[in-house]
Length: 113
Length: 112
Image 1 (cartoon, each protein chain N blue to C red):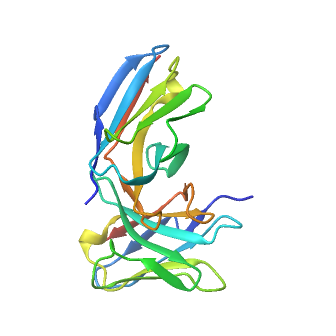
Image 2 (cartoon, rainbow over the protein chains, first blue to last red):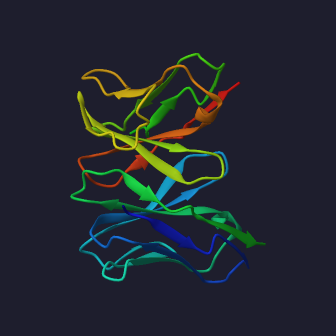
Image 3 (cartoon, rainbow over the protein chains, first blue to last red):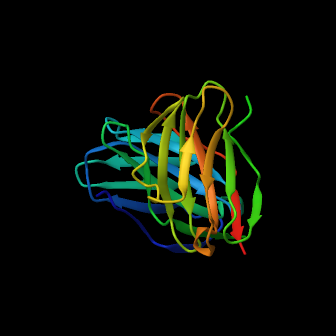
C-alpha cells in the first residue's frame, strides 16, 4: 500500500527566502506525482505534474524534482512571497495510472511579510 | 473553459437523511475522481469513474456510499442514511484520460 509523507508539517519563514518542501513515498512504482496548494476552506490548485520518466518540472518560481528510485520529491519555492502562504500537498499516482491519487498530509506554509 | 464545478458548496443534513453531491468535469474530461477530506486528516481517494463505468472503487466505504457518472449529466456521489462521521469536505477531480487531475472547490457536508 502506497504511503506519502511530507516534511515539515509546518513552516514559517520571512518573505524573500528560498525554501524546500519534502515529500517521500514508500512504493517507487509510481505513474506520476503532483504538487498542489490548498488555501483555507478552498479546493486544490494544481501546481506541477511530474511523470515517472521525468526528473523535474518548473513553473515560474516553483521547481519540483523527482527521484523515483529513492522515493522522494522536493518542491523548491524561490523568493517566497506572503501570497505563497497555503498548505502544499504532494500526491502520487501508482499502478498503471488506473488508480486515484495518494496524498500526503501537507506542509502548512506561512510567509511572514 | 470553466473549471470543475461542484454543487452544492455547502450541504447540511440530519442523521439518517440522504446526501447527493454533484460534480461537472471540465469540458473534454472523461475521467472523474472523488476524494474525501476529514477534519485534521489528509485527502483520501474514494472512487474513479469514466462515463457509465466505475473503474476503481477501492476507497469507497462498503455501505451507504455509491457513485455514478452517467452518459449525460454530472457525476453523483450519493450517501444514504448519513451519520455524523460523514461530515467532511468532498472533492471531485477530473482529467483528460489518465493525466493531470484538476480539482473542484469541494462540497462541505455537515451532518447534524
